[in-house]
Length: 238
Length: 364
Image (cartoon, rainbow over all chains, first blue to last red; front, side, top):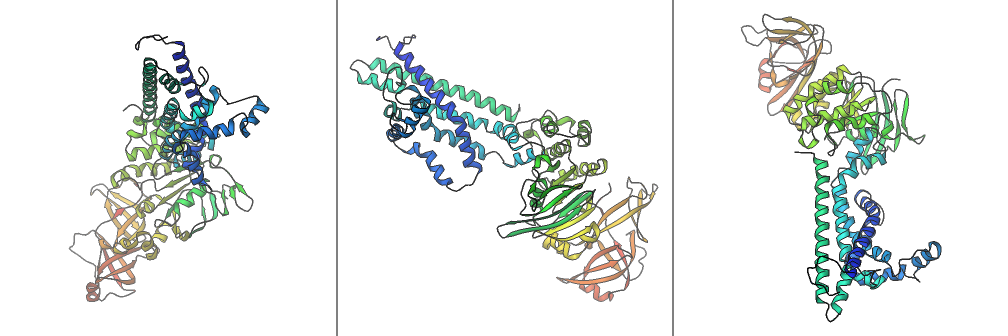
């Protein structure tokens, strides 16, 4: 159990925490992406009553202490929360104290960053390009999918990475909402924190630090590669 | 009826657009100072902007009618639109840009892909991305892209205004070829009087959202108030007359072409045009001098008999003389007030106009 720092084989606890981090991060980011694109589009392209309020609401998780966000999630989505109770009695689906709750918490925390990046890329695309597409025979949806979506792809990639990175680092909201259950809600940062609580946990903690570093570097490289590929598709070969 | 017929109203804050016009086949120029509502008018015709009131009818088909709550979406109107800033899709190659509309076309094409590529000189550009095109090249691609969507009507919104004068001169022949080779009605918006004089068959002057004048190019654009409206103070400082002339004869020995303006003749360096072709000339008032007797022993070749029809002081010790050549033909001359006094020029007087230089506005 107390292997050396640089041992290449992962202990079951480490593998569990790594897998859980990846799973909650990917699922949370993936499922919030369509909402992120929709909200970014609304904020970038539409004027509506209460836009300032909507903008503030989206950014709230960024400025609130994560513990507060986690507690609000617990109140809303917990066993006795209005949404949580409804979901459980109608669909038998629950966020409470399982990995889905961890994914929800990380999605909420990453959402403002994701929306911000995608919104910026929307604003960089001339809306008149869609008008041009319409005069060439494209419907509204066709113009969005064939023109705007490919052009904001770098922003979508950047926004997804930011959301995913925020999810990997998520601690406060997750531990408040779904607690610290090994194999269920104990992601890398929470596992690291738990290791630090034990008298001889320093080596274990350091291994979690190394794992986190590797995961972050991997995510960064992957997104850099994707962003370059997307950029190349837009600009063509020089 | 054939062609476009519309009456449209739209209010945006303090600005009101209220335009009624008809545009049969050929090129209809729409000219006016910036802020006159030219682009808004085109956007309403294309269906990109909803009018508050009014209707648009093309070839007998209603495209929008506010009272009937009818509004056909832009993608179903088959109206091509060439924007001021080409608006090519940056993630697609030139070929893919050209094919974007063609792939979505629901009806037969009016012109083949090869013909468009040839007409606009796009052959060498097909594999390139819009990032690697010059302004003139991008605008040519944008015209080709609009043509390949098989439009019934082409709207061109200041297609040359973002280009420098040399590029503008490069692309003008392509637009003229379009006009001659394809039987496609065109609405051509510009604030440049030379472009309109060269390209348009008839002209509509728009000012503050309303039609200030419409009709034949020379008839409308020679009105002093229209020149002032379109050219502003610059126009008042450099007025010009637009003259329609007919190619009368070629003199290959002297390398010159003779044009007739009613009874008068004007000689130009040899033009590659058939006898009988109608060309439009733009003659600046500062290039016209006046003599009260037929001048002899003078190097100026173009000397035209005329009658003074109006004298207007312009301030700064100068005045503009309007000269009638008989019929609809007229010229303008800018001379000093001093010269006018010394020569005793007055309305109805017979004079000889000495034309120092002539710019060909159309026909090449």
